[in-house]
Length: 264
Length: 276
Ligand SMILES: Nc1ncnc2c1ncn2[C@@H]1O[C@H](COP(=O)(O)OP(=O)(O)OP(=O)(O)O)[C@@H](O)[C@H]1O
Ligand SMILES: [Mg+2]
Image: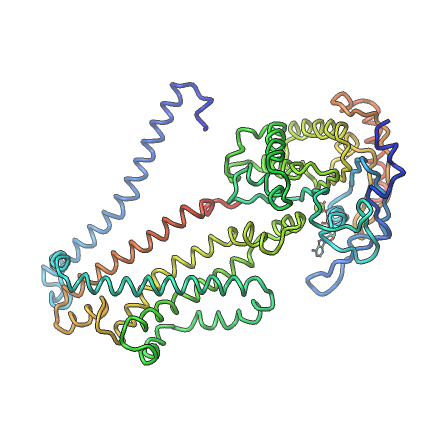
C-alpha cells in the first residue's frame, strides 16, 4: 500500500472537518442550509472525491477548507491549523477558470508565484513542464481569449499546480473538457498523485472519474446538503489506464451509483 | 501561427487572400465615409451657390475652405489655437487625474461609495457649463477659469466610470486573489485596476471631447483670447465663412485629440473587444 495508508493515523497533518454547518443568507432575506453536520477526516496523501448532484454544497465545503468561507458552525483544521486563505501549501482550482485577459497564458499561470513570492525560476520551469503535460506549450505566449473553454480550464489547472502544493482542492476541474482529454488528464492526474502523494479534494459529477482517481468517495445529496455515504475505493495503486473499464472498476461504479440513487 | 502547419503553397494563398480581404475592408472603411462626406459637402455647395440658402448666413464649403487655408498663415489663428488647446489639455489632465484618484478611493471603500454615489450622479446630470459664469467671477478673465471649467466638465464622467469599473470586477476573480492571500494593494494593481481599464478609458474618451466643450464655452462667457473668442468676434463682424473655418479647425483638433486617446487605449487595453 502507499504512503497514504501509513500516514492515515496522523490526522494532525491532514484535514479535519468537525460538526460543520453552513447557512447562507439569501437575497430575499431568508436563509438556506447549504451543509448540515459534516464530519470528515482526510489523511495526508489521500485522494478524496466529493460526488453529488448540483447544489449539494460541494463547492461550499471546498471553499471553507480553503479558508474562503467561514463555517456557520463547526471547525475545519488544515494540517493542524484553522483553515485560512493565502497559505502557500494549499491551492484551490475554482469551478470557473477565471483567467485575466490582460495577462498571457504563462503570466496567468505565474500569478500565484508572484503573490505568494515563491522562487520564480523554479516555478517557471515547473510551469513549462505542466504546460507541456496539458498540451499547451505552443499557447504559452498567447492571449487567453484565443483559447477554447477546455483549454482555459487546463490553464487554470496548471495555475493551481504551479506552486507544487501538498494540498490540492479541485472544483470540477475537467467539466468543460471533451471525453478524450478528460480521460487523458485523469490518467495524468492519477499518475501525478501516485508520484507526489498530494492530499487532494476533488469535486465532480462524474462517477467513473471519482472511482478511477479516489481513495474514498464522499457521496452527498442536496436540500439540505449532507453527506450520505463515504465509500472506500480499494483499487490498487498505481492507477493506470488499464483500470478504466476493468471489471472491478465497473463494479465499484455500480456501488457508488446505487448509494446515491437511494437518496435521490 | 495558424499557417505554420499548412503547406507552403497553401499558406501563400491564404496570405494573399487575407491581404486582399484586408485591403477590401480598409477601402470600405475609408471609402464609404469619404463618399458620404463628399456627397454632403457637394449638396451643401450646390445649395449655397444655387441661392437655396443665403450665402451670408450659410457660406459655401469652398469659401470656408479658402478662409481656413488663409488662416493657417495667420499668427492670430495659431495664438487662439494654442490658448484653447492649452486650456483643454490642462483641464483634461487635471480633471482626469483628480477623478481617477478620488474615484479609486471612493471605489475602494464600500461605505464611501454608498455615501458619495448619489452626489456624484447628481453632479453628473447637472449641466456643468452652467457653472461657467460663476468660474469667471471666481477665477477671472484669464486661462484659469477656462481650465477649471474644462476640468470640472470632464471630472464626473471619469469619476463615475472609475467607480463603476471597480464595482464590476468578477467576484470569482476576487475569490481567486483572496485564495492566494493577495493584499489590498496587490488585488488593486493586479485585478481591480486592469479589469476596470476599459470603462475608465470610455470615461476618458468622453472627457477629452467634453474638455474642449468646456474650454470653448468658458471662452464664450468671458475671455480675451482663444478659439471661442475668435468665433464670437468673427460672427460679430458677419464674417460667417471665417467663423465656420474656425469651427472646422476645432473639429479637426477634437478629432486628433480623440484619436490620440483611442491610440493610447488600443495600446493599453488590448483585450477590450474580447470578453473572457
Ligand atoms: N453566495 C451564496 N448565497 C446564497 N446561497 C448560496 C450561495 N452559494 C451557494 N448557495 C446555495 O448553497 C447550496 C450549495 O451550493 P454549492 O455551490 O456549494 O453547490 P455545489 O454542490 O457546488 O453545486 P454545483 O455542482 O452545481 O456546483 C445551493 O443551494 C446554493 O443555492
Ligand atoms: Mg459547485
